Amino acid sequence: MRTWKREGYEVVEKEFDYALHAFDVVKDGVVIATITPSTIQDMNQIIEDLDNGDDVNGWEDGSGNTVYVN
Image (tube, rainbow, N blue to C red):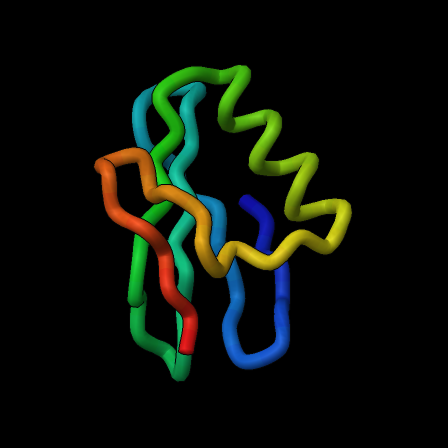
């Protein structure tokens, strides 16, 4: 599993549903959100976006909530 560091937080990939992985948004050692993709294609897009340096602030978490990193 991988970790992407951003200013003030990090995103940690974790096992979720067989080949499908979820992504914890961790700030100060506390999980403040979990991004749960619904498909492998969505998961791969998240990984690509994170690899490209995207910030998850404002993303949807897969459950209808917006991720806010303050």
